[in-house]
Amino acid sequence: EVQLVESGGGLVQPGRSLRLSCSASGFTFGDYAMSWFRQAPGKGLEWVGFIRSKTYGGSSEYAASVKGRFTISRDDSESIAYLQMNSLKTEDTAVYYCSRGRIIVIGRDAFDIWGQGTMVTVSS
Amino acid sequence: DIQLTQSPSSLSASIGDTVTITCQASQDISNYLNWYQEKPGKAPKLLIYDAYNLETRVPSRFSGSGSGTDFTFTITSLQPEDIATYYCQHFDNPITFGQGTRLEIK
Image 1 (tube, rainbow over the protein chains, first blue to last red):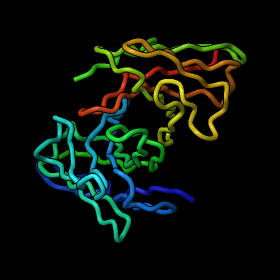
Image 2 (cartoon, rainbow over the protein chains, first blue to last red):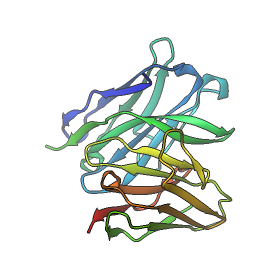
Image 3 (spheres, rainbow over the protein chains, first blue to last red):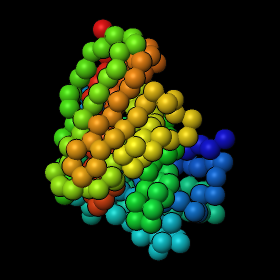
Image 4 (cartoon, rainbow over the protein chains, first blue to last red):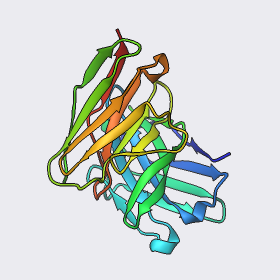
């Protein structure tokens, strides 16, 4: 079964760090870009960032709201994507989802597999 | 950045109705628009990609159309399990979503 499972969420104080993990199974992880999204309580979906597959350079892109604070990495040998979140703010409180990007055409993906999400609460 | 304006923000319909949601892009995005369904407490689910292509194993009562700046998502013969929030999404940098449409049963 194709599956993504996020972990690592929890309660953290403003200014501190947290690392989320996204464990993949059921597909060749290294062939896909991986993205992170979030949804604040009562709000819509927001893109956080993505990391390309090694085939396309393995580079990352980030939303302006997290650029310079969040870093996405991947371990293809373990089929895990990470979201390192530093200098956390109260407005980063959200459910965080990882998702697989299926290439529709090169340079454009659709997000066809999603994890169940992990809650991150930033509060003092 | 490309902005997506989705409407209505909420919608109430009866079982068996046809429901239509629109998504307007701030500039021409060709047919590069996807639609997702999100049920409470569950992960989003891809329904339509590239404006009108039905994702594998998605019921045929879901459909999409449009190109350029104006897009439409339709559910024909609404079923109870279709109660959810629906989002349009465009892949660029940044990746953007519409504000969402909450669909309720009348």
